[in-house]
Amino acid sequence: MEHDPRIHALLRRRSEIAGEVLHLDSQVEKLRADLKHLDAALKVMGYINEDALPVRKSCTSGLFHRKELGRLVVGHLRDNPDGLQARDIALLISRDKGWESDDNRFQKALKDKVSRALSKLKASDRADYENAQSGCIWRLL
Image (cartoon, rainbow, N blue to C red; front, side):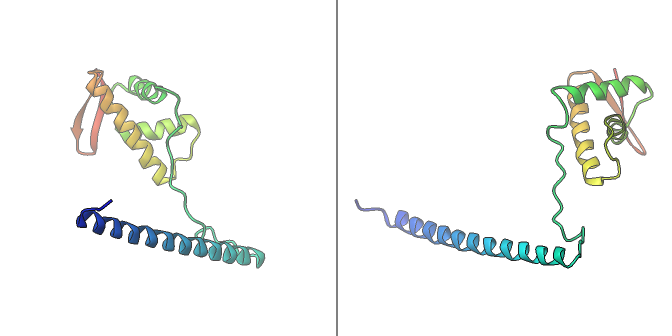
């Protein structure tokens, strides 16, 4: 079967890239093995540096049951008729759940989730916000 020269050129380039990916994968495996050995040697020598350990990305998925976050947000807005900012709601939820509030990455991710829940409440005409100097103050309607 004869191919168009353009298809042949694309197939050739594709195989070059695939070969490069395989080569880089083998390099990554070697580097991971080297890193593992270095960490083990440091541990044997009694050195434990928390900063040297990889930091996992904060994950907020799976923290709430279905519709639980929305209920918590509405509950806190109901308890505070003067209104709250998304940041304050996130801190209150962290306190209620017993989570650490000093992890900035986690708190930002949680605040983003709360903001999305507030946007859904606004879209369903259950909440609204007003702009203030310190940020948006959300209230139930």
